[in-house]
Image: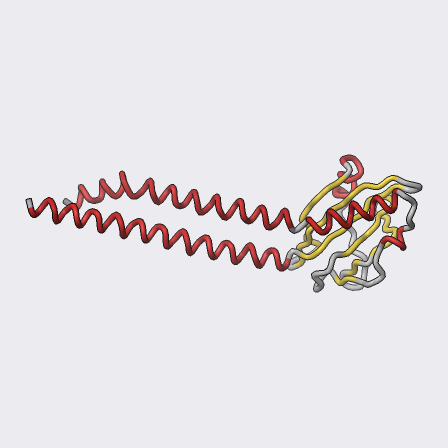
Length: 192
């Protein structure tokens, strides 16, 4: 009887468990990607607007806000304008008192493709959503707008916990339903 029940477990419940696991993974992946990609939305708007202003002739200092943003602690967006490879024209971003330099590959990609969107980790514990947009007016360069991913990553962690709990509850509930069905079937078979 136990052998028959184990065989039923493999044939009936295991596919349900695999399906529930795949569905939980898909829910996590799609929602996580949506949260991360939407973290770029303010930066896209600010970077494209700043590039348009610079293309129209505005000066770098008129485009960059005067308020300094400590990217190690602040959730505020920051703007850095590059007028050449690793040459900062203006910036309100600071890390340990200095303007942080974005990797040259991001700037080069923005110049050759018009735009780049990346996650940048200037040091351990600081992760930023960065949008770099190329502009070409009286001068050419790259507008970089970024902000911390700290709150988005908290949401992603919470999502992971919620999906894991839902997945476990689904597995346990489906196993309980399966075992209950097996017990009922066993009692029916014995009463014959």
